[in-house]
Image 1 (tube, rainbow, N blue to C red):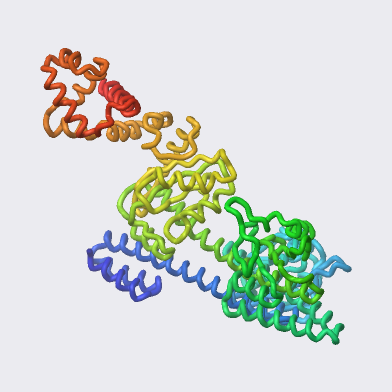
Image 2 (tube, helix red, strand yellow):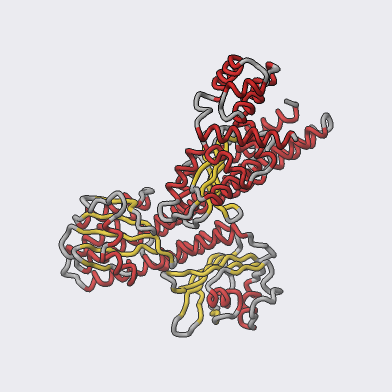
Length: 611
């Protein structure tokens, strides 16, 4: 290893910044410019990957902190002020502000600001469709611009332009706040100089807006609950229970608890069993003696109360079972189901709804974290599939290591075709910290640790084909992902084409046998010949024998050693000895119907290629 490479590795181990790595590599370039250039490029790529991962971790950590902060703020004003302060800090902008919808006037008004200095700007109202914020309110989609005053895409008005000019804003990004499909406001981040907002920053602002929407509803409902309890001053038990529920759920979130902890807290507060279903009605948490799920069906998924809540979006009861939909930012995330208790009073019903809101907050964050992780994995998968086979790429190995993957070990590449829901199931199968799965060119591709492509294809087929009999899974391998997967991916696609052509659901080239030649390339034919006849061919090459010729004569003679001996002009005992040797090379089942057909086809293909 050259001195340049060692020096750059030392800098990476010391967590040196990219500027330091670039400066040192240029200083070392005089001794060996070509090696230094390659080492510099690889070192900077590794440094860039580490920095990107750290940024993502910092963003996710910040979102966790924000979620915990918001969960501890019961009043809407404190929630909104906290959101704009966090948005300004997290996106490093000069100003952040939030507008709320006014249903009576049909516009939005300024509700909270951070970094603003203009009184006119802080009192601004945005009509539907006017300005960037008005367009966000009208379309319910995020918009951003690096130069708002000069951007003709937006409907400029003198009042808005004057306020924006007084505040000195140039670059603006706005994203909508949606609650159960209803527009409630817009969250903005803005700079007083030109600044292009990238898509990751827009997505981050969108995550903040989703948290703001969930927390706003939670805060409003908390205020409603407090007002109702205050009106019932004589109902001390209900007030104490609501206060205990608030403290309990806030404590769960602040301590980093999950859905299991929320279900346990609610069950203990109300003295009932509790179950949490995800968006696909699969049970993800439970507490107490809830009805047990069967091997193929969960009775809670089809409970009448669950159906009523899904239709109304509110707490519903039927047959002694209570259910409430868990949703955030207009997106259904699951259902909270409980039973085994006396009928719930209004205070207890609010406690259940509060539990649903906290559950939504936890599930929303988990969903955003999973989406961010899947995007990173999908990018790595695309790079691996697009790289031709060659030497192991250290940068890819390092990117995989940061995700807990071992890309220098044998893996199987599988192409899954014929289902759209399968992406999540494939990710669950391969994305457990040991493999990759994602959509690539409208196909689901999984890269799974292992050496047996047939076994991997069978497992994926069972997982993906549970609800879709049309799914086809073709696999190949083993291969080392860090050395490139383009050729393996192409072969897996050909295997999938062949499986679909003959009506098979899952398998590898070995399972297809000669049927795999339906969509083969010349390279596939060569691999097929080597797999079927390779041991005999290598023996003939080493010993100067002609066992292949004996095989051809034997099959041409209808399996008669005597007639084969006559055709070869040798004694029948010689043919018998050669057949024994062939059996030791091909296996004792080589004369079975299936193996014999494979061998004869391979001999015919070999003779055609030779001729």
